[in-house]
Length: 103
Image (cartoon, rainbow, N blue to C red):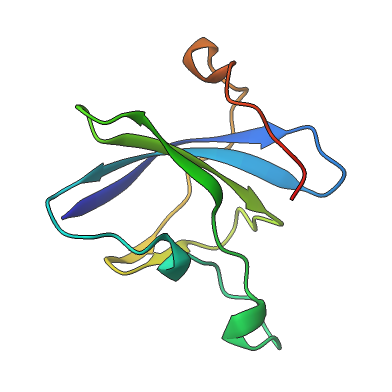
């Protein structure tokens, strides 16, 4: 299985939020609840996890999800290990129709 982050894009929302585009390849079941980011002095149960994850293109194994309070200086922790984050960029045209809904 392979998990790569293709892009990180700021989202206008009441809370700090980013849209993350990822490539997820492999036949194994993937637990999105295991994707998180460490928050010092907080128990793991309080760490953020992906919100509204959805396939973008299942044939190419591309997914998108929202992530609140993303710390760009820290990697995402996944079942496949720590994944460093690329610098944020404006949302590309192919992601313009992905709507953020307040949780």
